[in-house]
Each structure stands twice: as structure tokens, then as C-alpha cells.
Image (cartoon, rainbow, N blue to C red; front, side, top):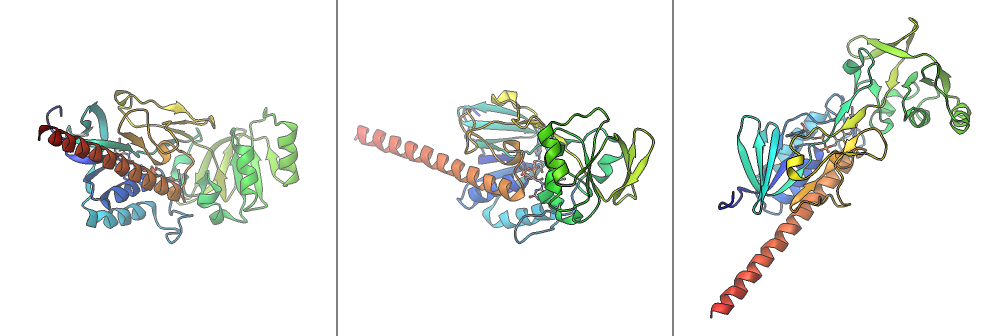
Length: 320
Ligand SMILES: Cc1cc2nc3c(=O)[nH]c(=O)nc-3n(C[C@H](O)[C@H](O)[C@H](O)COP(=O)(O)OP(=O)(O)OC[C@H]3O[C@@H](n4cnc5c(N)ncnc54)[C@H](O)[C@@H]3O)c2cc1C
């Protein structure tokens, strides 16, 4: 890459809402773009995407299929697979894909999202994103007026109070030794949220829906939904070679990649978009972030090209 110009103006790692939106902004700006995507968006276990105006309830993978189709006129290229490593020099970046192929680009946008790790409750994974939930905006409406159980965590009081807006049958299950501060207790009690000191050990369901909680004491209870809080984390390999690292998120429940407010990293030409830098962002926010980062990258390239043109013109004038 020392002597050759990179093949693409921009490479984007991740073809979720953030990555595809960045690709759209760049593609419409006549940039040569490649999107490398492993095809496993964070919300893949969910039946539908909510709070995305005009697309309410669309299956997550269908949303991304529609996104890819919209990029066709702009010549965006796709590589289905995983980026495994990165290199960097004065001309730009190289990306090593699974299978050993390499691509090179002048700019690199990391939009690879984050990975959720579920609490250790037997049987939970089967119902994650269905009626084992974490986000009232994503799935709260679907469980309105139902029996909603909340699994204790550092976010459980907040989640209980949020889901109480959707149902007056919210129960917070804790370990028997759980201690609440007086203010938390007052708020939960004032909203009629029952606190039950029984530790959830496992869940059971009918293969489609979680239907029962199983407790450590051997008892069980029927529920309509279980609210949990996963830990989230950065899973993208090769960050260190780019001079980046995963940072503890201020919420205390995971890691992310810190950038400036626009998504720019301290590494020249390297940008981050979507959940990877803002783990709480919903789909439409991740899409907006991708659009903004794509536009910033285009602006950066424009400035670079103006500088090159001005230098060339001056050099030419100097020789006359
Ligand atoms: C269960 C669940 C349900 C949700 N429901 C909703 C909802 O209803 N509405 C809503 O607005 N939000 C919802 N969210 C949040 C939503 O998932 C995120 O806002 C959104 O996925 C963020 O988009 P993104 O593009 O940043 O990341 P992602 O959508 O996660 O996309 C990242 C992409 O990068 C790919 N990738 C990762 N590593 C690599 C690699 N090394 N090489 C190549 N590709 C890679 C992944 O496979 C994936 O395709 C939900 C989240 C969860 C967990």
C-alpha cells in the first residue's frame, strides 16, 4: 500500500443501520465504498423493529435487506463476512477479511455494533428479543397490561419504573439479601411495583414464548414477559492495531469505543458510528449517526482533495 493508492474511498465495517446509512451518504456523494458485514445485527433475535417511523414492526434482517437494495444505484459494494484485522499507513487502511482476502481504503468507518451477554439464567437465550426484553421502547407496547417480571440488576429499579408505564402488573424479583435504599423503595412502592425476594434460576416456555419463571427455592410462577439487563461489549477484533481500545461505558454495564462527539477517533481517517460508540442508541439513532459520520468522512476527503489540487496548482505555477 506504500506505492499503491487504496482501492476504496471508504471501507465500512458493519452493515447494520449505522453502516448502511454511512454508505448511503458516501455513495450519494459519488464515493467508492465497500461495506464488510457479518450479517448479525444486535437486534436479530427480535421479531420486529419498533420506533422506526414508517417501518414499525419490520423484521430486523428485512430492514437491512431493504437498506442494501436502496444502495444499489450508488454502486456500493458488499463483502459478506467478518473483518478480522486492520493495518494502517499514510495512504489509508487495509482490512483483512475472513478467508484471508484484503481490501484497502482511504478512510475506515467502524460500525460493527456491540455484543449482548445475557445474565446466567437457564433457558433465557431462547426467548431473548421475544418476551425476554430489556428496552421498553423496543418491545414495551407488545407486553402492555401483561404480567411483567423484572430480573434484578443494577438497572432493575429503573426498568421496573419504566415498564410500569406499560402495565400495572410489574413485579421485581430479587435475591433474598437484596437491599434497596429508602428512596428507591419509596418510588417502587408508590408505583405499586411488588418486590419479591425470590431468585430466578431458570425460565421455561413453549418454544415461542417464555411462560414460566423457575426459582432457586424450587417454586415456579407463570409470567407474560421477563425484563432483563444484558451486559454489552465491544467484540471487534484488531482494535489495538488501529490504536483504539474498548473503554468502560459510564453506565457500568459494558464497553464501547470512545470518540469525539461526531464519531471521529484520535487516529487520522478513522471513524466510528452507531452502537459501537453509543450503545444506548436505537436503530433510527444509529442510522442518523451513520449518516452524520458518512457526511463527515466525505467532507474530510473533499478537504484533502482541495489541498492536493491547490498544492498541484501552486507547484505548476512555480515551474512556469
Ligand atoms: C433484542 C433487541 C431488540 C432491539 N429492538 C429494537 C427496536 O425494536 N427498535 C430500535 O430502534 N432498536 C432496537 N434495538 C437496538 C438496535 O439493535 C440497535 O440500535 C442497532 O442494532 C444499532 O445499529 P448498528 O448499525 O450500530 O449495529 P448493528 O445493528 O448491531 O450492526 C452491526 C453489524 O456489524 C456486523 N459486524 C460485527 N462485527 C463485524 C466484523 N468483525 N466484520 C464485519 N461485520 C461485523 C454485525 O454482524 C452487524 O451486521 C434492539 C436491541 C436488542 C438487543
